[in-house]
Length: 203
Length: 203
Length: 203
Image (cartoon, rainbow over all chains, first blue to last red; front, top):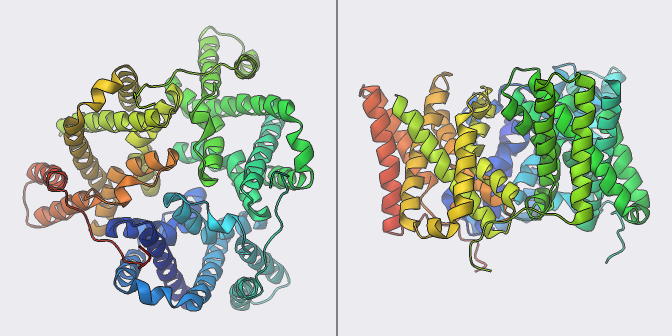
């Protein structure tokens, strides 16, 4: 489905904006913003491609780099206005992780990998970019701490293979997978849900 | 030797526990604990496989993921009890680095790589997981600072190629390599040995 | 040109010294200094080779490891004297990023990759080592913050493809590319130039 490609570019754009905003918050210069924007946007997919020993996607398709450069320039020019978009950013980010998870699963399935590992690689595609963003900005990775984020991706992955097993047409599987992830993620934000933590007794 | 495979899974379990405890200490949620446990347990071997351009081991063998999930769940349920096991954890960790170093060397040797580089990749297999654990938890990597840890792995690697050169039967080489690493590591802990540091004169 | 190989080893040496000094500054032990020196010196080229799915260069050429070990030992013995070399270190570092960028571009060009991506991989070769150095030392990456560093590499990359397009003989292209990078980098240091930052309005 060609629409997935365009949603992928939109997700890439939003992730690059998120990286550029983190970089701006750390007073990085424009190159630093490009670096963090790039790593946030393509970090997850790059790790997936390396783990699967497939060609790294952005090396052979210039559109990703163009979208990222655009995103960083726009963030550079309109950062104050973008920050005011708060809720809209969260919505687009939810679309991003939905699409990234689906693409990660699709690429893994092509290689006849066990479904459980496919889901793991789908989640990796969606979350590693944000984790790299925080590591390179010398922050504790946000999504490891307190939000239903990877869990939304994981749920989408489980839905994907359940529906496929039931013989649901693949186009419908794709749509429901993405909508599940977006739905769980937005519900978690709206209802301030989070996962339990391990008690180590020292605070 | 099949026993190496089981020791590898035990090492994986212990490394995952160590990652989950670090995550708990940072107040990460259960997904964060799974992420850090996973990266601690398979990070070193993954980097080795990528550097050698071999298939990444945990993608094609589900046992590693199962062991890691078990380790994180058990840590989640019994974290206080596990912390009290202190000395036993250090012993199992020593077994882990011994086995990981040996496996790293074995995999490299298959590719006709120079012995010095094989030892380097063996050490990488053993230590990168713990380094990633600390980087993703936004800590200065512990093992870069003050302990005979990588040095134990390095000594084991040198023993491996020395014994092989002398024509010692390979099964014996494997056993002595692992025991050397465990022995040096435990001796260093018991005697509080550490390596010298570079003096930069500012403290 | 064989001279590029020797310049590459010189760059490797200087990057390893820079890594070892960072490690010393963090009170890492000698293994920690070797680790950070190694990752600083070969980190960029390793990422490039992984992204391009080429054999990782230092696995099959022992000279890099030898140069790095020498650099770390020398840093260990003469750290105070080396720190006093300040300006000379900056000069050699500029040579290092010039050569690293050129080598990154040359390796990418072999694979018929788009020039824009070749330049990106050239810059990656030059800057990722320094970024890894800071991440593993738990510091905010210096070159993301305030200096014309990656920009010098980028300019060199653009010069490379411009001259090649004009039909300039390749040996001359190589020399001018390296000199451009060194020149811009040194000019930026001498004139204290830096890139603009994104304004997020909170300081």
